[in-house]
Length: 217
Image (tube, rainbow, N blue to C red):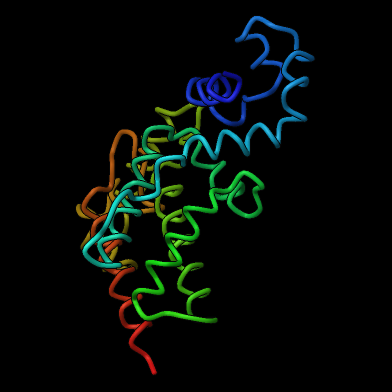
């Protein structure tokens, strides 16, 4: 109940505003009542991260290790998409989290091993997959400024529309494709403007890279 309530608070008000005091207020209890069940904010956020990612392990049998990875990447993105305010939390909690799902790690390693990776190369591939999934999704659903959002968005749009072609020819030539559809060139995050096509291309690129990496002698 406390973990679900904490996640609901983060969904509602964002990660920066989250505190045990605010959570206690939402639950109608004293902060000490929460401290009785969780040692502190960090431990509670670790459990929240685990809750957000509880369904990212692909179920059942897959016809290939590539299919397993595609399913994983999509499930990971959907998990963050359901709780975009938790996006900044995910990367930090995956560094070292006693609540991490060991079954998920075992199955991901098994998929990569099935692709022909072992030893140090298996470790490198595993790190690449985790970094890729976390990097794309947390960037896509990164929060926009809460204060002065309209003014900030208008400023970004105007700046991009006025890019001088003589100085930035590639940027100006592709601005219609890049504007609000590319990292660092957006005024909305994935909640309002999802990067579906880019995400699917990203998954292809990662898997192609892993295939090449696995095939090296």
